[in-house]
Structures are given as C-alpha cells and as structure tokens.
Image 1 (cartoon, rainbow, N blue to C red):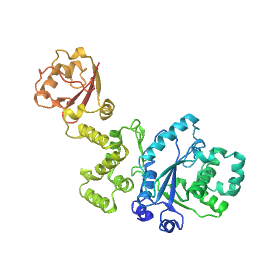
Image 2 (tube, helix red, strand yellow):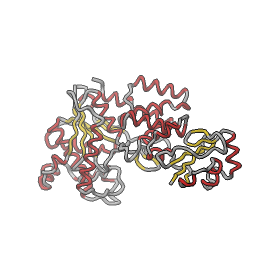
Image 3 (cartoon, one colour):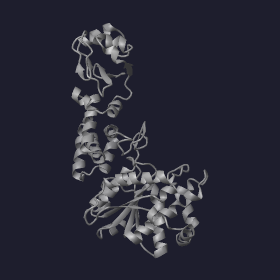
Image 4 (cartoon, rainbow, N blue to C red):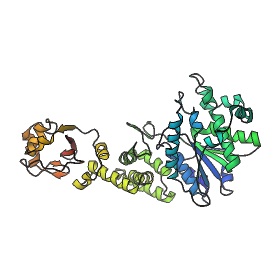
Length: 425
C-alpha cells in the first residue's frame, strides 16, 4: 500500500490532520468518507479537489465512501457562507442527488476489496425523530463547543438560524453513523469543513468512547486572487450541458504558469516522477504550455470522454492554430458558437447570397462589418488574406457558393486573427 498521507503531502493537498491519522492509515486498509451536498444538479471543478482526494485514497489501497447529503442538503451548511442559503424543495433535491451520485460513480472503482460506495445520509435520518435526535445526539455536544466553531462565530453578527446552527450536529452524526455501521475511521474534506468534521470525532468519543480521525485539504486559490473554478460565465461544471467540453478544456489550457504547477499535482493521476519531469520541462520552455496541455487533456478525457477531448482540441485549433474546413464542419452548433463567442456577428438572408460576388458580399451585404469598402475587400482578397469557412478566397469576383455550417452559418476570416460569424436566415 502507498502511504496516503505522504502521497497527498507532495501533491500539496494536506492542510490539517489529527494526530495519529497517518499511523492509523498505515495499519492497513481504512475506510474514509467525504460528503457532497446536492446544492445543484451537477458538481463543479471546485468539488474536484475532494473527488481527487477520494480517488488518491482508493489508489493507495483504502476504501472510499462518497456521501451525498440528502439530509444535510435540506439544512444547508453555513461554513464559508455569509448568508443563509435558500432551502431546496424535495423534487429538486432528489433530482440533484441522482445527478451528483451518477457523476461520483464515474470517478471511483466499485470493484475489488476496497470497492467504493455511495451513501445517502437521508437513509439514516428519515426515521430519526427530532426529540430522539436532541436526546441521543444533542446532549453529547455542548452549546459552548458549537459556538467556538468559525462557521458559527463568523455569522453571529449577521444572523444564524437554528437550522444552520444545528448543521454541525447533523454532519457530526453522519460520521458517528458511518463509524459505527461502515467502520469509517476517517473523514476527509476541505479546510472549511474542519469544525464540522471534528464535531463528528468528538461525538464518537463522547457517545461511544470511540476513536476517529480527521484530515482536510487546503482551499485552492489562484495566483491572481480570483476564485478557482469560476470563469466570467460562472462555475465550471462537470455536466457537459452546463459547461461544454470545449469550455472545460479551455479553462485548464488558460491556467497561469504559477497555478498549473499546483493544479497538475492535485488533479493528475500521473506519478511524482512524471509530474516533476513535466514541471522541469515546462519551466525550460513555458511558451509551449506543456503543463497546461498535459493537464487539460488528462482531465477533460477523465471528466468527459476521449471523443469530447478530440473535439475540444479541434475547436481550440480552429481559433488558435492551423485547422481545415473539415475540422470546422465537424463542430456542433453549440461548440461553434462557443468557439466564436465574442467575435463580430451579422445576419444576411439566403437571397443575399444568390449570384453575389464575394467582394460585394464581404463589404456591402454584410453591412461593412468585415470590410469598409469593396476596394478594401478586393485588395485583401488579391493578397490572399481572406478565407470563408477556412477555405481561402481565390478571386475578388468569385461567386459566394460555400456550404453553410450547421445549415445556417458562414465564418469569414480577415488576416490571421480577425473572425466574423455570418448567420444566414
């Protein structure tokens, strides 16, 4: 068995750890869990740190439990929140649970001696009455102890409902239940979860005189101070309907050199020797973006598929490198529009194309967005600097007779970097 703690340490993934945790893990196969609250119907790359923690845990020979919070999702975790979250209705919550469970199952192995399990805390809370809970759980944890937690103290001035105040008790009982029924000796999570996790170890100690352990990973920050996992459009989701594989790939490709050295250790399954070799090679020629490409390719294929990765690479090459008409035609409409998001656009009708020469089309008919005049268009066409759908326009009097992309678009290119998307109605 590989030493899990040492594996996470060189990857920069250890923030806090209870004394004795490493010794417990080195005794043999250990069961640990991480909780995922179903606040949305998809996980995002901010959740990937914890997913990878479970993946590394399993690869080190231990048994991972992924807990989906059917019960805790009804309460709302105050950790790291400045205001109370809106509570979800039951149908939304169940839909989210199903989606999150399916995503988690694609990362872990459910075969072998240390097969992963996905558990739902609603299964043990649904029959647990309020009076029974405050008698059997609440009496073991003092209010003073709960008030000492950062997630509580930081909200006392702005207000904290009893619902959110009680969250750490509910999460603490999760740990107790999994310790007692699944032999889970360790809870893992982000550093903002430390208070909730140790409430569980305290409950296990006070209620059954048992021993359990806690370990957290640091919260990822970006070198420029912006939040990891966010883009201008919001979260980078694992669901391809929310964030396309192209945009997912682009997020990693656009990582800064400083950030990507940190990311590849956390999100790659490559071993230490290979990663350190890649980092060394990257530092010698950072302009080649070797680390960015290596990470983007590995993580896009793992989260989506090999076909999705190939499409993302092809789409990226269209805008930033050499590509062909066939590459362009292979893109679906959603990816095409995302690749050329932000480029100037205009609309014409099919009647505008009939019998029209390309010079007139690229100036007057497209409202002079591409070229201000026929003379300017003619001169650049003669110089070989104009393409439509990645095919070079050969002559100024050439007829507009190009196949439409997705039956409705033409892509004009002026020079190397100026693109224009024309919608044909």
